[in-house]
Image (cartoon, rainbow, N blue to C red; front, side, top):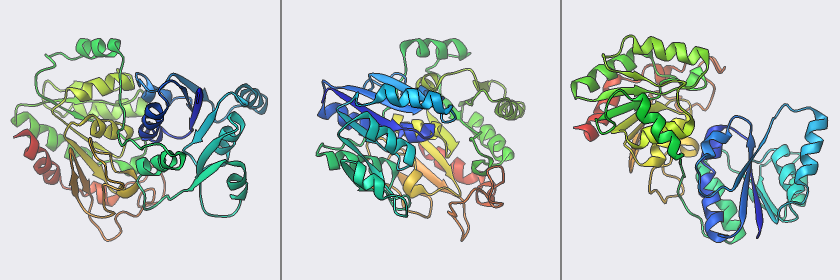
Length: 353
């Protein structure tokens, strides 16, 4: 294998959880050039990844003429193409890019062409198999040893950026909060974050908040900081994903909902408290550092695996695997809103004390 293309045209978290497969390919084919195709805006999670030689990006809303030019540009340029996404378009990308191609195929009508066009395929399980394990089944199908390690990297310049922004020595103990997920149905209540921050100040730990550049997210985080202890540092919108990774690597602990940053913290091995409500932990639980199990988490209940404590909201409906109680992205999830602050405090105290 001289050139390999891995297709991961989904969200940032999906790209990150594909890095064990990429590392497996790197170890199996150390001299190959590994290129990764992702959506524009998600490539930052691969910056600093030593297993990736080139990142290709595609705009999901590109015009037909531009799309056709892109397809022409990747036609048979690779010896192997691996799609980790069972959708029509990523499967098509893999089939166009290489004569040897592999990908997952879901159940249902309209899937037969994928089984015919792909050189090899694996059954896609969207419910009972963790995303890392699902991706690594492609490695097994290729006959290469799977490596269960989520890779999070950063560039040297990003280390310096963090040092410049922190108004204290980075060896001083601090805990990172990432309070704002992409969608409201994954959010924890504001007052709980305030209570948690006050508790950690009493233990002698500073609070550092991360977040994106979206104006609504910045306003939310700024509003929290106004009620946090003096000395809290707001880095929302000021760091790249690589910078966030370096910040996390120096932290004493991390707390956050079901987001890509929570997956990063877990992968880096720091004590991580993940706040889960509607999401399926079997499929989306943060992959703990050093974990070699196929499915680290059960469907229901609070659980601890290596450096991760996954706190799940209560209720007979949990996890409903729906988009909030009102079934839309911006609705609340009662299971998360009612998750007691004391549960998070007790989880953190076990590490910080």
